[in-house]
Amino acid sequence: MEVKILGYWGGYPSAGGATAGYLIHTGEGQILLDCGSGVMSRLVQYTSVDKLDGVILSHLHYDHMADIGILQYAAVSAIRNGRMKKKLTLFAPDEPVNILNTLYGDHSEIYQIDSNRKVHLAGAEIEFVSVSHTIPCYAVKVTYRGKVLVYSGDTSYCDALIELARDADIFLCEATICEGSVHTTGAGHMNASQAGMIADQAKVKRLVLVHLPGDGDLEFMRQSASEMFGGPVELPDTSVMYSV
Image (tube, rainbow, N blue to C red; front, side, top):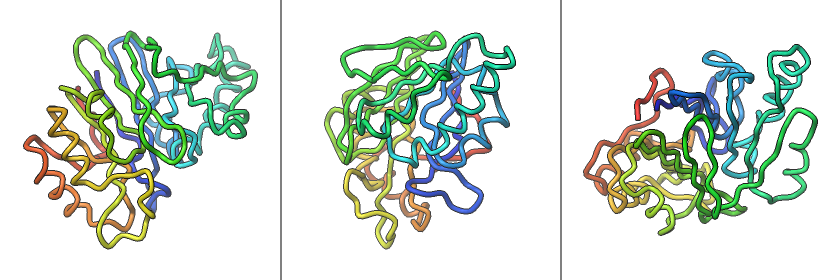
């Protein structure tokens, strides 16, 4: 299993960047995890909508779903031209209802995320756990042939995330709060030290900090996480393919 980070900024991107978006390749297909601002222009460098087995939206804030409508436009074209034989498979929380309702159409098959139900996409088993954010939000665990990727979504520190991330091979964890940054009020988010604490308690093998503030001191954040977690801590790199 491999993951390509398409975007990792929180709230809004820095110049030329993108907010949350992660393209997961298994040996059997592809999954898009979140589809934030700027993600679509990155996605088409590596794949196309007809090759996606499914899309998962951790929650319905625009920095995680701003480009989903554009992806659906691509699906409309692919269906019309015969490149897609079925609708786009899309998993999302059931709230806020007014935003969820904008996702429906002839282009998409919508499934509401249920933390009590595992799903299967691209040969992988996918689990969800509700985390602590300002609206319903889910952390996501993807398991394929014994390898595990966990993505925190947006959340404040919570024990449920520790359990989901237990022994993960790679942990993509939000770190939105940074001393000196005015990017966020902090509600429903963590700082890098807390991300490191969760990684340490979960005994993950590799931590990558994501959902970063554009005005944050990223090297300071990496060092802060490293003080709490004995394993490797990385800042996201959109130029590489991460092996899980």
